[in-house]
Image 1 (cartoon, rainbow, N blue to C red):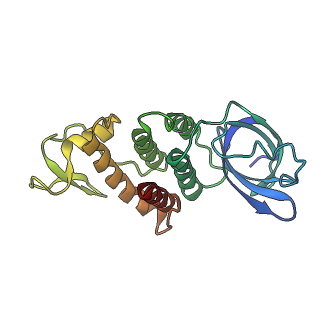
Image 2: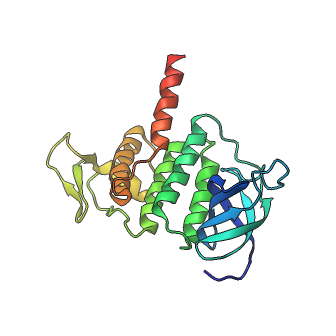
Image 3: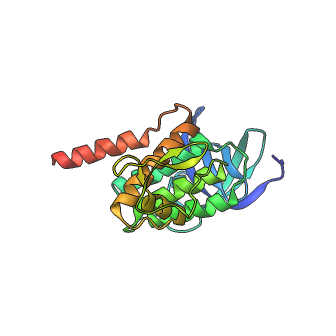
Length: 233
């Protein structure tokens, strides 16, 4: 990474944790620099001006000085209002962040994925949050070079299993596998019915698990706990 200071770069905080006495170690996803690790010096001090801004799900403008793996964060400005997410929608946002943290390398730019990420976060507050998540997962796999093979000549009425080398393979069964209609909807990014969403969720979960290589995601477990607690009320 160049040591030239980066000025007012659009980005989002993915994660922050305490670092040394009064600082934070910040992981951010930025438009032109990709995922970056930054030290926010003194950010845990009660008087720190950046403390309130360093939150997830908040569009930011970040300035920093690169220095190897960890840059030094400078000015931080809000690039817009914090996203109006509550309850499980916050966990949806954290889930997207966790995927980026686990699957993107630092200092590897993905400007197209950044735009998809920003759009996904904006859509999480609406009625099509699950569809937005599935499309983000699909686009993330494509950006990593592991996009699903979803040809547009599948039979909507047939059933398919997914082979990781060959793509969809007809099962010859009326029950086993994914609906052809669901795979076509995922390829076209429509996903406008419950079965298509369910099939997409299962297929994308398996595809992401391969890329995660056994690393567990924490946010799905938190989401299950939240939903369980709400059912008990």
